[in-house]
Length: 301
View 1: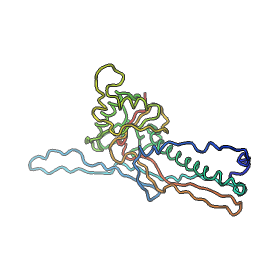
View 2 (view 1 turned 90 degrees about the horizontal axis):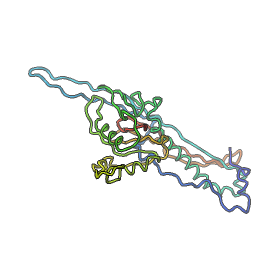
View 3 (view 1 turned 45 degrees about the horizontal axis):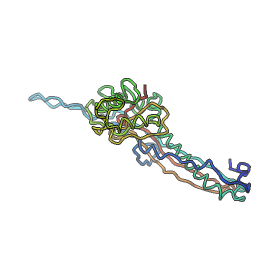
View 4 (view 1 turned 90 degrees about the vertical axis):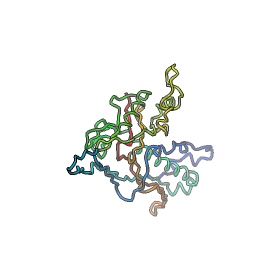
């Protein structure tokens, strides 16, 4: 449906002083703080988890060496989605000079809608991180206490769900350092960046930046700050829906990913039959995760 003069009747009145509602500021590309971006050249991308080998065994004198098998354990698939939105202005509205006054405003509004959708899509990966209906390649949710491996299960969430505080943050960092690979070998994983909703930004700032321990009268140092833990600090994501859930991005590669199939493209064309001018924005991308060790989190108490 095209935007007509009837919808913009005030635009035709000479006493009009200002237009508003289309020029709000928007948050920055907050998804870029969470996801590693790669380009895509196909309808979907797949990433395969390889198991590697277990610990080596003792070779008795005169006997043969033990052999081990490496294998593929699971596949993470990313299916690119097409995101698009359009609007049209009638030929009569253009003739009455509404084009010059409104076209640039509505094209900016179109870009803002596309940007908002992208942020919502990105945040949805974490918003659904504890939901069993949004399973990853290993068959369970992104944040789960029972990720299956060849050597048993591993967890990337707290054993007892907790709100963000000094104790829960320290325990999260301890648990991250205990991560193992698919064969049970320890890996040197570290928590690098905390991802939080706006409701936790004040708590996070005190935990990360205070010289002393938060909420005590003792002369104890803030060990998290003093040891340089979570070295990339924290980032606030305004599209997270759980006010007390917090997440920690680790330095394990191939964790949270964003594949960009086709960058945003805008087109404009006229319609011969109606004379309307149509504007369209379109892009293709997908957000997801491969290795769940790339993130740790708690849903809050």
